[in-house]
Amino acid sequence: MKVTVVGDLLLDVDINGTATRLSPDAPVPVVDVAGIRHRAGGAGLVATLLKRDGHDVTLVTAVSDDDGARHLRRALSGVRLLTGDPLAPTPTKTRVRSGSHAVVRFDEGCAAAPRPDCTAGMRLAIESAEAIVVADYGRGITFNQDIRAALAAAAHRVPVVWDPHPSGSEPVVGVAVVTPNSAEAAAVAKAAGLGHASPDSAEAGKQLLEHWHSKAVLVTKGEAGAVLVEASGEAAGIPAPRTSVEDPCGAGDRLAGSLAVYLGSGLGLRDAATRAVADASAFLGGGGAASLVVDTAAVDSDAVDTAALEYDDEGVPDPVEAGAVVGLFGSQAETDPPDGVQLARMVRAKGGTVVATGGCFDLLHAGHARTLAVAREMGDCLIVCLNSDQSVRRLKGPHRPIVSEEDRAELLLALSCVDAVVLFDEDTPEECLEFLQPDVWVKGGDYQPDDLPEARLVASWGGRCVTVPFHPARSTSGLAEALAKVG
Image (cartoon, rainbow, N blue to C red; front, side):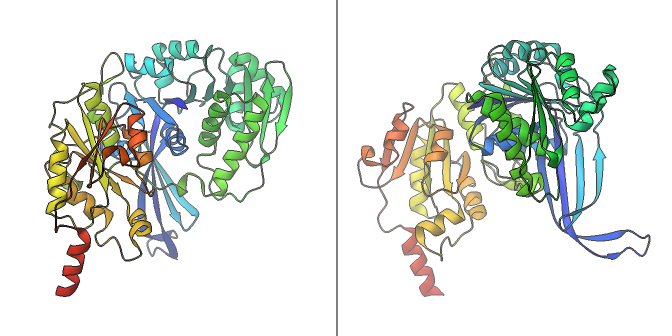
């Protein structure tokens, strides 16, 4: 499903470790740090979850130009990112945990920011969506009048689910569902002078429904579930499945995203709300937002930067000249290359030819280099679909790969003919190909192109398959056997 998320980005930083002693300086725990992870929070978490569900996700937001923004762009690899003017600093929430228990949280730059501009690309993303989630975190994007007008128009055509914030804007008239939690409902009711009814009650939901002029209100109540109030005035309690919750972070984001998708697929409001509440409970039971592992569509590199793509007035990425996007890896990158999916879109938007190839590329040898060089000459960029370590083990046995996926990617990107690398965990690259949709798919071998397993898939979007003959006496297995004899 084509889902557009509109809202404010936050950077969530998890500092995980163990605390077994108190500091001699003060009676506070000393946390021995075992790891630090950066995640996209706020509207970024909604987009991340929907992308993991397999949806085509566009995020309409504002992004800063600091170090935090680079972590966000990496975490959001694979999500189409449409932004207004850069805002600074990146709002950051840093959580320090000992095991599964929170020790302290630091918030930086979370105050309201200047309202970003609305580009034609942003409006197009809202107009073309099949479902919309507004994740308002009080940073200002939902105050933009052009964005609000586009959302109001979209509410007549597709389900718009609005997750509000006490410091944010009022939902536009006619949205399908507004999803405040109990505290947010209480804050709105107090600010609007709606009386003293409990925000957990059906009466509070009715008051908010009338105040917001929405089609429904779903007041969430944590482990107690939610109360759904429909336009008819009918209210229904929705229980939450019992689950063990250590950290409630992200429950509202999971619920809002699921609710929009269920409504977009044609489910009735009550069924959609019931399933969304169950999804939120299951998400928390699985560890919630803290359990998410950053999964970029491109090489695991701090240099991945989707902000390198600028969008024109038609919502299409402005391409760079062929060869200007270099696929350098890690901290050695001279520029911030976009990930493979974004690169494919960018080259295609210019009218260029996207070439892709795939394989394990374990122990890179001259035969690989020659095949890749020939493939690059067939178009304007070459993207390599690289089997992950797990994928290689399933295909070739427990003793492979010899070289890790990180090193294999780095070696490939060191070749001037390779513009980007995309890792995939499956046994075949078909899912990866569906995202890239290359114009030319190149494989090494002595068989006919039409006999390739991917031939029908590539042809479905008008692409073609090409085979390049293997070079005799050059193979990974032969090289591995030779090395074993040397050892």
